[in-house]
Length: 263
Image 1 (tube, one colour):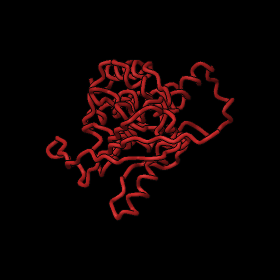
Image 2 (cartoon, helix red, strand yellow; image 1 turned 135 degrees about the vertical axis):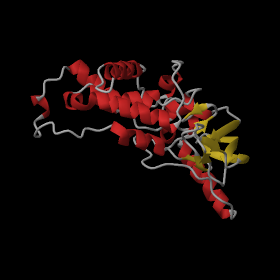
Image 3 (cartoon, one colour; image 1 turned 180 degrees about the horizontal axis):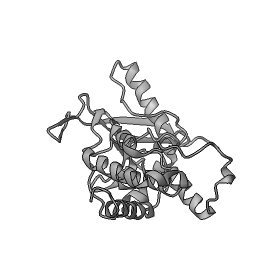
């Protein structure tokens, strides 16, 4: 079978100067869409491999290559944060590194932009600073109390249904697609997955109240928007994190506030 090749116009956001936060507002570093004609691109290539070809061509011409995030290229790390033709990670519900060019058969124009959110300032071109997620985790997404000596996993009685829900929440890779998909740039799906992951397990019970309060407070401080339950986050999440985690986090937060010693 002959190799199938694609020809299309690639429109890429180019931005040399980083966005800056000034008095709580995001000051854009400028930037514009630049068009590159792409020829003879194999449908078997991944989207990132196509960008590699573009950058190799730009380097041969003595031009600045397009900056974009990537690391494992196995759908695990969540670094490949690109907004493609109106969808985080592209038209398939997967990470950009696992998106193949066969998904663009018949497409004449492909538009690539960075995540757009106040809490995710653009560093350069398609690279954004997702340090806000790191700070939310640092605020409380961990277990710091002594929960006893290490024991065999089967020694702690956890119903399979609960264990499955905790594992499902733990699959969140923190890519930020939920924020990019949300019209309010809300981080509720990400935060709720990290809260649920620990709140469901016995090891996380001791800090469940302080955890959710600190993580929600940090999320708000970072400038993420509010959740209005449109479901766009769940629909675009490459790991299919469920909206039920948001409901669980809301219950955890209400419980924490109603039983807080500070009331």
